[in-house]
Image 1 (tube, helix red, strand yellow):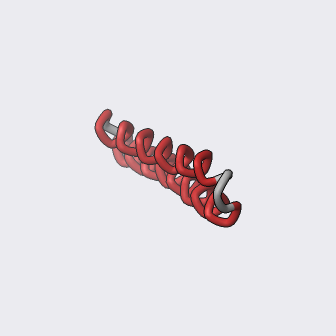
Image 2 (tube, rainbow, N blue to C red):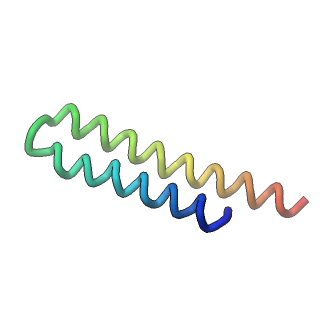
Image 3 (cartoon, helix red, strand yellow):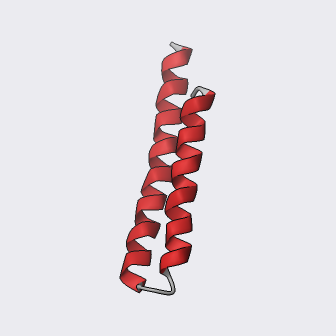
Length: 58
């Protein structure tokens, strides 16, 4: 994975998790939604990294 794509996943994951932390005080369901979106973003980042690494080996 190139640096710009890694930075994109890092920044968007931190944005989702920051939104989770802020929304905890306002609405629990919204915080749960942001948390799930953040975890999906992190998981998708790992999947993209694995795919790019596998493609680079062949």
